[in-house]
Length: 252
Length: 263
Figure: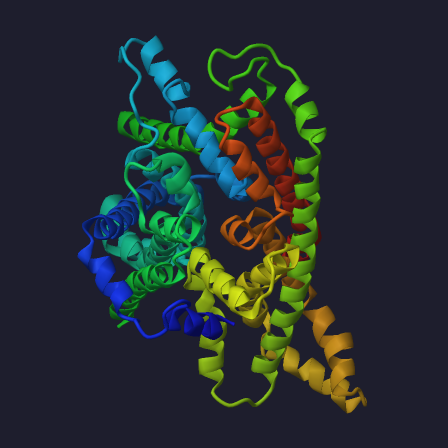
């Protein structure tokens, strides 16, 4: 099925012979390139922020919460996962809108006079994404941390390492493969998503999936939409190769 | 002592803040679904159920909810059967290029749904298949088969081969073994992948959006509601969806993961 869809896509629907022109057009138009850059920038920052936020939470759940409560703590941490994708973005819009919770709160405590324009910027998109992926990463990193034998930490402590040094030199490197898997998932899922940037980011700064949808929706231009999809897939492939290489190095 | 206390204070502050962040949108969503005014923003005015009434009396929303359930259940059933058979074949039979087949089966997991949707749309257009709930269902089968395959395959251990051999020795045919021995043994992972597929399909937007025309699924209908701006009715619909998904989750937890744990 996938192979077939690829085939149709590459041959293009309207003019079957002009294959590469779609790609050349993409790279010669600055607003399209900008969308690609936006996509990559946003996904990279989402990945970084999510890992930085989720790792401590996963660590605390794995090490500081009593065993009996760990499962509950984890389920609580990922419960909003089960709000629908569309609904979750909408909920963030309620929080971040001009008359939303955040602005009302900041105005009430007198920190700002005029509401901040957070919605319809890339910061809203990033917030929405980070929210989703913190939950996902907490889950994957927790699973990874639980698999580590406590003997490693004990051995390090026996050899005289302080708590922080044990963490930095032993636990963190050991959990890197898990982090990388989660980070790769985050990058791939966020760069291919249309909903969150559309609802939260608005149309001031387009990302690649939005541009693809514009090609389909407004212009019914399937060949160029397909070409852009191939570019999107190429970016994902590059990310995959980068992660795979990195993981292998980690193992040897 | 003071250092310890500061540390644990820091830890719990961090946890509280992060849980707050995680629950903030859901809390706001649910709270303002009870809003007694036209806009789901501060200040909050008294609880009312009128928006839930509006949702449940909106026939298009209810229809789309039924559509979603139908698509989710039937596409997941097909995806699980296909995934199970593929896993069985690759784990138990001698097939050429096993590694490649496995890679091809799991590769779509990393492809964006948008790209899968686009590929399907172009293909259906080329074949002249009109968009309907059926095309959405096929799309969801496409995204869920790799998932079901991966889950079931990973649980298909070698230790179960002996039991299957024993069945063969006792005179069971291939189909009998598959149906009466392997499938029941794999039931926990089969159920797990079924529930996961249902939740994925239930929630999926972009494929359903691109491959539908008149009959739409719930996420697409809610998407349509968003165009008219913020409204407590959307909050109510979203809260209901959340409630249904969480019930599914609890059901899955009770039915499947308890069993998995016991094993």
